[in-house]
Structure formats: structure tokens, C-alpha cells
Length: 297
Image 1 (cartoon, one colour):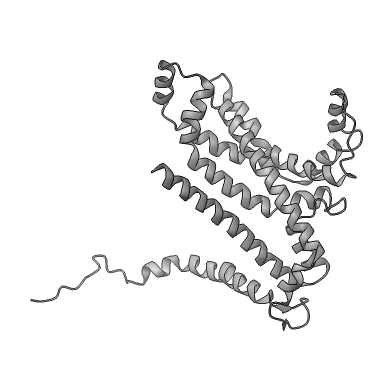
Image 2 (cartoon, one colour):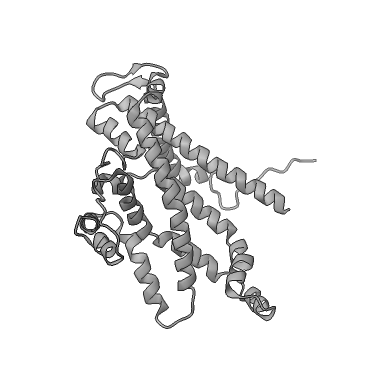
């Protein structure tokens, strides 16, 4: 019996596919894998960007354990993420539910709520935000109308981080869009059946909406946690990390060590610790989600 051999009907070489995806392979190797490996190796060296790197093993990581700046930045980053992420998910979901209503001109409202996410932390937004939290800014004026004493936002270490949290909370458009897309895809038959059974809006939210949005909530939770741990722009541009490093994140520490102090070996080591911290947080969230799914089954 003769063994049949495969023949390409159009006469194209078997290497054509590899040739077509070669730009992606080369780009990944040059711009992702190579910097990834170099960063890990530089994290185990004493390197100032000028002289040749000197291998020091785990010295950078041992120094990190007793570095007061790193401990402070780690605490601020975790605190910032713990405050921002839940608030952003709640505000985004609540706004998405409002924008899911069928009312006249709803497209205008959806666009208006999404615009802050497009603006981001550009210079105009930063200047506006800095003015809002001055001693006579809008934030203190609103507190005065409520009968509360004005707050020294730039001088009180316990209050300064909330300026950054509120700025990022204001930029909830992308998270809101994901929630809104999921809400619009939910079958309306569920709510019609619940209404027939006498189920109110609040009960329907907890019994129908939330269970149907579990996967979307998880996706947004992971994305926002990763973004919060990598925060740099907002504290750098608004507070500069102050007062007393109360808004000094790990991203700012990496920047300072790399570009201000020329400690590039140590900066790469801190970057790897941040990478492991984010990976660990995401792994824990996936493990909890898997356990919850197993319990439901």
C-alpha cells in the first residue's frame, strides 16, 4: 500500500505561515522577551547605566527588605488599590445600570460619562484637579456647605491619597462600558418572569443581575487591580508623592531609583517584586473564583 503524501494544492511552501507571522515573532522576541530577561538579570547587579554591571546576586532584594522607602511605597500602593478598586467597581456598575435605561437621549449621557476616561491624567486635567483641592477650592467649598471644616488636602498625609483615588474614580468610563455591554446582553425574559412572580427591582438585582455578571465583575476586578498596582502618573503629577510620601507608590520608587539616583539594578529588582506582587494577587483571585465555581457545581 503506497503511503500518500500531502501536497499543498496551491503550491505554497510550508514555511509561508511562519514567514507571515515572523513580524509578530520578531517583535515579541525583541520588545518583550529580551527586555524581560534583561530586567531580571539587571536586578541581580549593581548598575548605574554608565559603568558595566557588577553581579551582586540577591543583594538588591536583601536591601529591599530593610529599605524604608520600599516599605512605605508598598504600603501606599496596597492601600491605594484596596480603596480604589472596590469603589470603582461599585460606581461603574451603578452608573452602567442607570445608563442601561431606555430613556430619550441616553446616548448623550453615555458619551458624557465616558469622556473623563479619554482625557486621562493630561496636563489640563491635572491643573484642574490641583485647583479643586486647594484651600479655597471646590472640594473645601462643598465641605463648607455641608457644615464640615476645610481639609488640608496637600498637607495632611491621611487625606492626600484620596485626591488620587477620586481622580481615578472619576475615570471609570472603560469599566462602565464593560458593565454596560454585559447588562445589555442579559435576557429580558428573566426580569419579566421575576416581575410576574412579584420580585422587586432590588431583589432582582441580587438574584438575577449579580449572578449573571460574575464573570464580568471578575474581569474588571483583575484589570483594575493590575492598573492600581502600577499607578504612577496621577501621584507623580499632582502630589509628587507627598506629603511625607503618603502618595508615594512603587511606580514612583522605580522611577526615582532608575532616573534620579541611577540605581538601575535596584530599580529592576523592585520592578520584578512588583511583577510578582501583581501575579500573586491575580493568582489568588483566580484561585478564589475557582473555589466558588466548584462550590456552585
